[in-house]
Image (cartoon, rainbow, N blue to C red):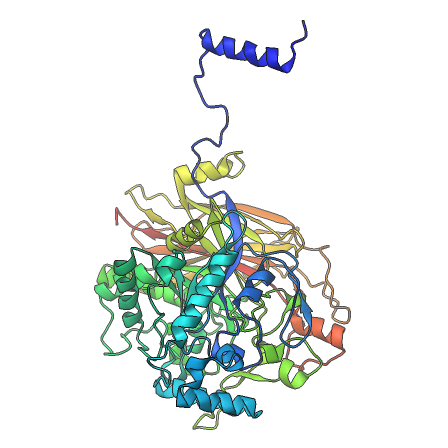
Length: 624
């Protein structure tokens, strides 16, 4: 007998009511809580609300920034149309808190601005065509740390506009607009900037006005302010430091900023409470490592900015160990052994720091650091504008870093269960995140007690969480003396370049209390084999400079590895992070040359190998 749908449903209901019972859930996803997707975004984008963006030609506010991130076509400030190949999953418009909204206030003839003598002075300068003089007038106030607009409601007005834009474009499940801002500490012109990221909505964020560098340049004071915010609102904050390469040794210093006291356990605990993540790569250079610090690492010299900072002081060799992520991670192990806490136990992300309202990190779609440097035939701006080192050095040293040295970087990748503010913020807080230098390659890592067969299980992710820890996690030795093993899988972006290799970067504290490092090639494309020196031959280079193209005829779309530390010692503190390299592709200057017929500087590279850096996994002996 053929049953119609109604008869069938009745039959099923009768079968259930007559004694049929369910003894197990059929769906394997019921009750599953571990992160199951990687989300790509930018935690460091500036709109016209940042004075150094708005007074440098940016006419796009936070709403246009969100629309662009969502995949819409927008017209950039210099008149060229722009669009992403694919939308981002999340964005933080992290405008500078110092005189937030000053540039649009000038254009809007804001009454609060014009009622202030200094604000009226800037307005008059801009209206008379002397915008550069107006900008320098503002910069003088920044450097002496005296806010001419103190007491004005202007900052609160534009902060609430900024949070309103985030609220408007936040679409849980599809796109996340996290609330945030940048605190721009710059003692002596040295970069100690932090982006402050809220887990919260507008109702909580509007209860404060962002702390600025006018208030303090000391990160410890920022942490106090963050603690006060959480106590007042019940909300949650974290801060992300960036550009240690432009800090002239201050970012990971051995002493506190204000009182120059040696770091202690309390400092270490507070720093990692408030700053669990470091922005390791962005437009103003890459901060993973430096060839002077990692001389045996042939990939350490990538996007290196090492001449100075924003002030007049030139870089010295003794500053470098206190500027780069890998060295800081190593020194953190030594501090932990000494203090009982690690001040530099951070995860790693990338972001852009673009001041154009356009989060562009692709080499063929790079709109530059500021709007004046957007794509054009004007090489004086596009290639040769000085980005850092503008202040003359007293010894006459050339400390300038130019626009052509900018990286089209980077991206923050987070492993999360949902595309929401809460899930993304929580991933940042637990460090289950990684950095890319601009592409959307996928990387997943687990560390623990695994076997090679665990890499090929159909439930390898669930098993990874059950038997180990993900990137950003902690492994504690239990007296077994068994070396940790890593499961690693990486795949290229769907529309991107193939992969060259997977590497594991190990840092450890040896028996003499000295920090050490080693880079291991653990998986690679093709039939290459390491030479007598242990080095893997280069993957090759298919870049056609004239046509700004490359070929995926080399490399591999997917690489994976099971790796166990061959030099493990159970009594030595260590960390492991994964670096994944893509094959060479054309740089943005090469794409510019093709589109505009311009000639980049001879020193400009014609190809680069984009890469990812995962957050480390830390191994601690015993039960510590």
